[in-house]
Amino acid sequence: MVSVLQGKRILITREEKQANDFADKVLQYGGIPVLVPLLKIRCQHNQPNRQLLRNRDSYKWLFFTSTNGVHCFFNLLHEERMDHTCLSESKFAAVGRKTAQALETYGYQADFTPTTYNAETMTNEFFARHSHLEEPVLLIRGNLSRDILPNWFNNQGIRYQTMEVYATGYHDAMKDRLNATLKKHYLDAMTFTSPSSVDAFMTMKDVQLDNAVPVCCIGTTTEKRAAELGLGNLIVPDTFTIDDMLVRLENYFEQKG
Image (cartoon, rainbow, N blue to C red; front, side, top):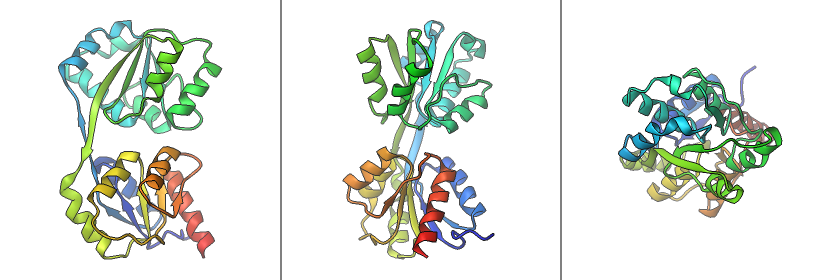
């Protein structure tokens, strides 16, 4: 059966490597991916992070809030020539399925993943499955991560350290491509996978938007940021994955007729 996304031009704004993976999925649905990666991810191999790694044998839980965090953390282990056996006594919490799958590529299973892939649910569900949180904890995240987890740790009196293993910045070289794409007024849908991708889009765009174009956001946090910055016609999948974004877009176009 031919998908209703056949021939639909779908804007992809996420970081380049992840944008390529997203594009492959759009092609599987018969859509036309329009790649304008607005973000750049850089792993942070700095002295504070190296020091935290040297102390890492004391951490009982490692909390990962993104796939980027997983990859940059293990890249740092590799750069420091640290044997993975140093993680043998640790447990792992992953914010979502993709983050858990990223852990599996390095040979580790997530001991905890929330049912809904965001930090709020992560905090609400953790103690429902684990009677207590062994301390101390290492929180592994990026520079733009929200403070949901640190605030929760503080409120619970949990001893933890934070390791910012990557920095997210705007891919400024994409500004001309973005505006050239928007000027064509031929997009059938736009997608955003993080609040920072929405921020980058609204900062770089110089073109009046067509509010009839659906804006598909992964997660309620991304949706909230898009609404705050004036984007309309917002749709959000029930499960926060790329596959479910595309299913949600299919449902939108089917209902639209």
